[in-house]
View 1 (cartoon, one colour):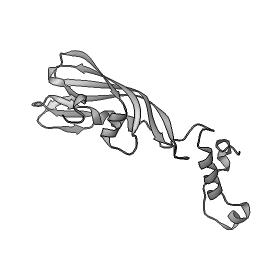
View 2: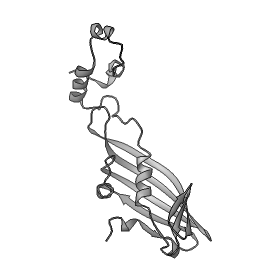
View 3: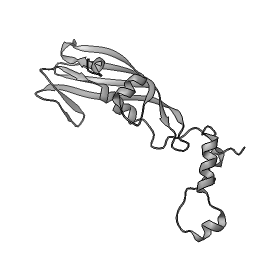
View 4: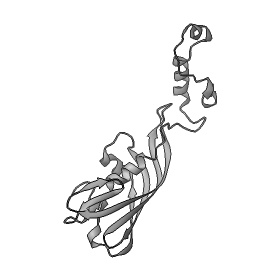
Length: 175
């Protein structure tokens, strides 16, 4: 059995009108996707399929949390995921994706949405992902501050830009 078979939607068998499919994406799903960005989480995915005569609109609703490394302290942090996206699907002779329309071979009549779900999750991760103020690993933050911030005397002779953690003192709590 292929590892993403449960994410196949057989479009040719759906009646005209609306059909709803629900999926729970958990740690097993993220391990099978085998991507470094997200390896754990729980996301509920509801796919509402609106079938018309010759096309399908797939409306994806995603809601849940994933675990990703904090850019600042490298500990895992929870990132909330909430997203809604639509994809139009039509039948054709071979699989292709053009603009916002996905063409599915009419002979197969099915689409596998596993990768669509993953892409929508990845697109919801902020570019900068850090813990809320005060929640970063204090030990790591103290080490970072110790190794990056130079004294004022040293930095006066140095014209290069350096990471300034002074603006982030609220994130570093001294012991």
